[in-house]
Image 1 (cartoon, one colour):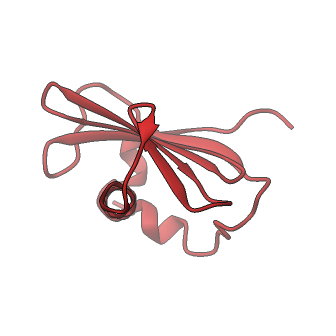
Image 2 (cartoon, helix red, strand yellow):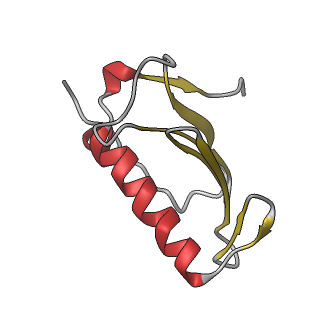
Length: 106
């Protein structure tokens, strides 16, 4: 199975015009650590929904000013670090066959 990170090697994540969402395609699928994630990108605004067991966390990353909100509250440097680690884990651990990608019509 192909890992997502391998499929994304040529994508420029600095592109301010990229819009799309990557999510697990079934509620029954989890990442190796038992978590679930969905990542949405709208230009320089990234949204990560993270679920581990019954707990959900919503991260909103604003690339232009390198700031983050967690559950609609201003985040800290530690929250930003956690967001980046989670995104890296998601892209490195998920297999393309487990995912669905949503890209809005042009």
